[in-house]
Length: 190
Image (cartoon, rainbow, N blue to C red; front, side, top):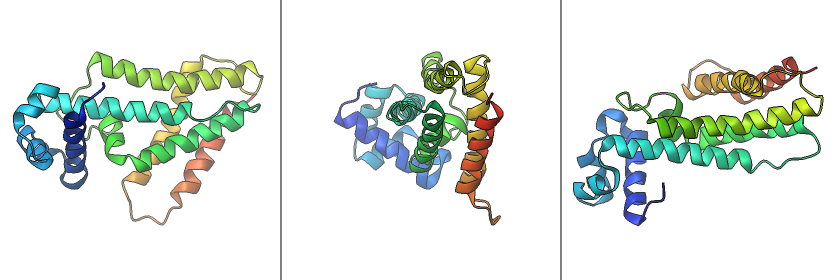
């Protein structure tokens, strides 16, 4: 996934276009123009618009994996899970365009490749490993750690998805998020 400076500039341009104008404006010609380059630069580095979106997808998961692995392992695996939840929320809110590409189909005609899906699954495995650590410590009841990770992730993702829709409802989303995370962890407890 390593890109040269030109590739990075093109990827940043694609992200800006998605953020400000949406998927309908995302074309090879537009990405190149926004980056001040020719379309040949896009084709030679990414192959197509879908190649650009694939790199955005992979970049998002790389940043999410980094955010998760940056949470240190303390003596308390439950506290570590809470910190992973906080890291996930920070990632989603800081990188909302990438989050949209990864989880919300921000580019409707993009289908992640098997490699991209495998990368996403590896990030979920980081959460599963943390949950397994809490199970091994006797803090969570025993079950398949991948299944438990899907329960935790779907809860966190659901709250974030609603928050990111920017509904006009007077809801304290940060509080709802952390309460939901806390309750799902408790629900998995012994």
